[in-house]
Length: 297
Image (cartoon, rainbow, N blue to C red; front, top):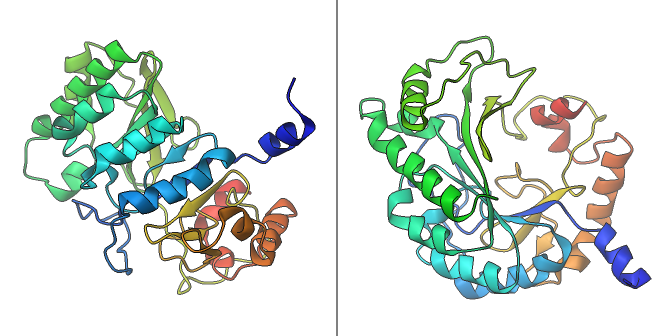
């Protein structure tokens, strides 16, 4: 039987923690904001220091906030560290180098979900054959399913513009041909965000949004957010932020390479934010200018 202390501790677990292992991306998508911070790759030793603090308080880690995680020069070592500490991983990637990196993912048992940002390729390479990009992703999906049928895979189409149709016919043609399926191509983001293709394989849709910024107009002081409630973010330099959309660490709660993470999360600033969200109050100026928060109202 678990002790009351352990049960109390489990109740405080986050659903996920976003750890940015690199803020450098191998693509430049029009729908992704520019990162103003200096380029930074999280060193393996520092990642180990962070993950040891994160492991007891989260159900899984996401190895990104900005940047392309599988382009990390020591990606295999990062995965091994998570495996050794029994930390489940949700991975989001543009998939451009999946053919070169798939052996790392296929041999590992810590991966629980892989998300492919499918919209990124044509945004960067409109004149290149989409087939050359998609087939390695489809092949990896098949290989992973045969080895680990419990792992979820999402193909994300997040380039949808409000009140504007986006031509995804080529993607659907290739998808249906490879998997020998027929997909209902009608997209109603406001009603259905996911479509099941087969067991554990999904299409996921969403529309573009504006990232929070001090230059955006004030939207109000009332609202809720999942930041500090279900998740937190940690930048590649160790800076802890309350939300995965705080790409420039405008709300820096501390640095977990210099201070214990639990102390940071129990700090006055962090607690004021968390209590505010729970009571429909936005206490930080950046939150009061965040268009994404309106989705939770």
